[in-house]
Length: 360
Ligand SMILES: [Ca+2]
Image (cartoon, rainbow, N blue to C red; front, side, top):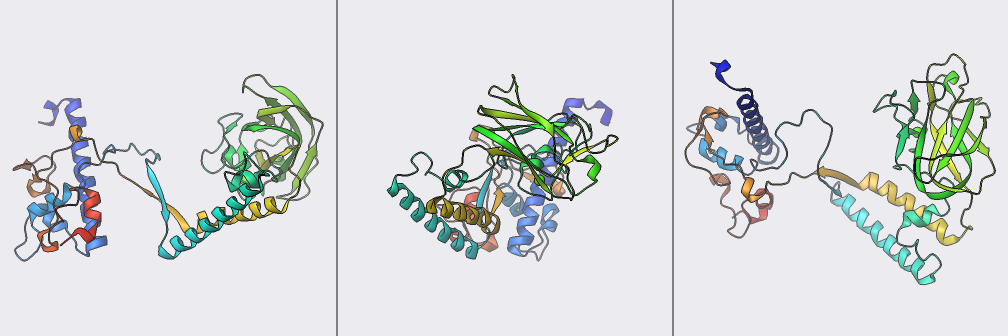
């Protein structure tokens, strides 16, 4: 019998099945986590002494049946829209206190008029004293795709962490391109990774570009040899040209037979740093506090968007909880009668459901 179903129909059936399963999961997780009720029985039938009926289960499910994400994610690690929120009420208070301190400081900076153009954020002010032109989060491109995409990617070379490494399995000649704001550099620093010393760079070649296509040689030569793991070495050179794209490759590695190139950190050393100033030093300190605060007090949470009105799905009771057996009339979202009713003024969607104050 199955053979009479066309592939397209099969695909659609699968989508319907997964949509139903996702809905069951959301309804039952909400029941278990927020209501302290296992709702699974009501998915298939009404128990005589159970306060939640089969029909009510599907009215509740209607709240979740119109989320816009595809019911099958194809195992992609791509996350949709999200919100940054405080981890808990104590964290919220601490973060707000910090934001108050930051606003007062920026007001003070603006009043001096010393850093016009840079005073809109702590990060930009702090950056004036930072020696490294590249920043964690700048775009980077590996010289080849022969690296572990998650644990040893090129981004690890500019993430300001010594415990993360970039490792390229193409060995000699591999490296990376770093896309930065416009800036002149007069040196680089390299920090060896905590693994086999033979994989450390022995020579380097640094080129710069302003369009990402044509590159000019800035400097090349030997890398001072690393005598320890996680050791930082600086290489200084003459350069007066400004670039936005820096390509750094390592033609030779420490061990001629090494098959892999590895590096823990790379810095592009800026030629001109701002003069030391108490305001900038405080900006740096506050910026560090901000980074710590973001880590300690904030977290992100995914948000599921609702489908637009014209694409809304119809929710019906599923006989015995089977995805391909919808019965009865279309249902509107509704809460369990034992919970009371939703306030007439609250929206008939997940937002209304989340606003528990609106229950009467
Ligand atoms: Ca690193």
